[in-house]
Length: 91
Image 1 (spheres, rainbow, N blue to C red):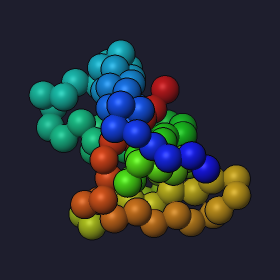
Image 2: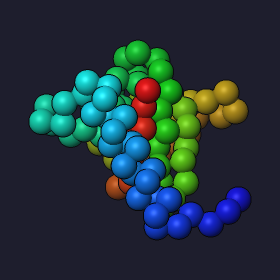
Image 3: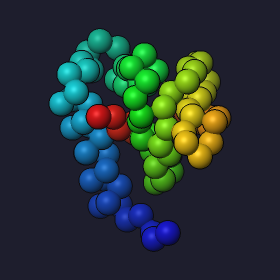
């Protein structure tokens, strides 16, 4: 895998923000991360969680105050600490 530059990370964060805004999820309704993650869980749709410059894809299966749990075709359980999440992307 290649090195992630600051400009590529900034572009990814901008794209994630635009996806959140264009999806109709309102940031003033509370935590926008929570809104995207809850929508993934309720609608059983995938998200891309950005952690330390890497994207982790999956569908949210469980939310807790400390962690987000995802499932994917490859892994049936992916646990991500909330304090490590940089961005969340959803369609």
